[in-house]
Amino acid sequence: MNLLHFLAENRMQVLELFLEHLWMVGASTLLAVIIGIPLGIMIAHWPAWNKPVLAGANIIQTIPSLALFGFLLPVPWLGDRAERLAILALALYALLPLIRNTYTGIRGVDPAVVEAARGMGLTERQLLFKVELPLASSVILSGLRIAVVISVGLATIAAAIGAGGLGELIFRGLAMVNNQLILAGAIPAAALALVADFGLGWLERRLRHR
Amino acid sequence: MGQNRGAAIEFRDVSFVLPDGHVVLSHFDLDIRRGETLVLLGRSGSGKTTTLKLVNRLLAPTSGSVYVDGAVPAHGKDLLRLRRRIGYVIQEVGLFPHFTVEKNIGLVPAIEGWPQDRIRPRIQQMLQLVGLDSGLADRYPHQLSGGQRQRVGVARALAADPEILLMDEPFGALDPLTRDELQREFLSLQQRLCKTVLFVTHDLNEALRLGSRIALMEAGKLVTLLSPEEFLRSEDALVSAYVRAFGAGLDAAAQRRVQ
Ligand SMILES: Nc1ncnc2c1ncn2[C@@H]1O[C@H](COP(=O)(O)OP(=O)(O)OP(=O)(O)O)[C@@H](O)[C@H]1O
Ligand SMILES: [Mg+2]
Image (cartoon, rainbow over all chains, first blue to last red; front, side, top):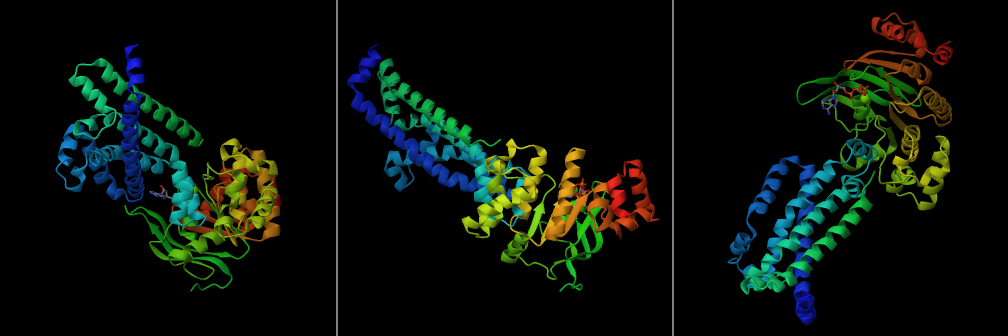
């Protein structure tokens, strides 16, 4: 009961932190998509790059998030603003599911379909945009969904370096041993993750091909 | 340049060897005449599909040359132009699962830059040609039966009016009645269209019925090249083994054709 009360009284602040959170997740996901999908396409076509690229993305994934934030802090330009740094770090974490799913999705296209397309005289570009990417789209989207859900959770930790977002409420709540504050940050974050999961899952099912 | 002016496709001492040293085709020589239906007959793994892929350059020969209309296609644009002039019906059908029947058939005309008002009637014409109801145009491949899918595969290969058709067991995996029907349609179609057809099968009946000549392949080698009549009378050990193996299974239609 008290929680609702708290949320109502501080709605402007919670809303502001929620929007900051959304911005961090959105911007980092966009960055990860711009880098990850082309990388996934690349390793699907040049298998020699497959191992190093996936290994790299895997290693990033194993760095504890607080440590990664810490590592990036002294980097010039980047360290100037905590939010900037958080977006880059979140994007790095989102890379692995995007690269891996783009790769799996493209490799999963029926070889007979690819052969028919080549045999009919499609250019490599047409093959990619008319055949491979559309057929891989639901698998790629499922990678995106995983990336977003992970990002929403990880973005709460970004508050530790002063990047704002819903994590701020959680950290403040931890410091003040105030469960209400913790919940006021955690519940909107969980809701955001659920909505993203549901929405992208719905889109994924719509794009799936029989 | 190729040497035989009457040939649409020429294989000149063509070998195809895999990187691991496995010889798939060895010293293969064959002319396919303009307007004929040449059947490649041979058992599984004898190199039939490989032979087709050498024509549209999905594979390049390790040695020797394959001429199409007297020329060896170069790379890039030439290669694409060549492939768009060659209709290809692949063994696994390979329809685009995310396209409707209509888009599947209209794809090559579309990338060739035909105007929409020419593509639409062309699609209808193709559906009719292969005996499919025009109501199927909006369906997706998974909503079709196996036989309907194979027909769409043939329609797709014919859509841009290619001079050459490569057909890899286009009527495989069908019940005998549907197969018979499709073969009959193929014959009447071929009488009207007179394409140069390279047709792959391992079914002797189909070969006798559809082929103007039959090339028998075995382990990557061309054993003989015979007309259907000659094929049934041949004394060649492998040919007569083939005919014997089919024995009673040799159907009346094929027999009639050669008499
Ligand atoms: N990409 C490949 N990698 C390895 N081996 C291959 C490849 N393509 C073909 N082969 C081998 O080459 C031989 C000929 O294959 P091909 O597909 O041409 O046979 P086919 O006559 O079409 O057989 P089927 O009637 O079963 O379709 C086979 O032994 C096959 O295993
Ligand atoms: Mg084959």
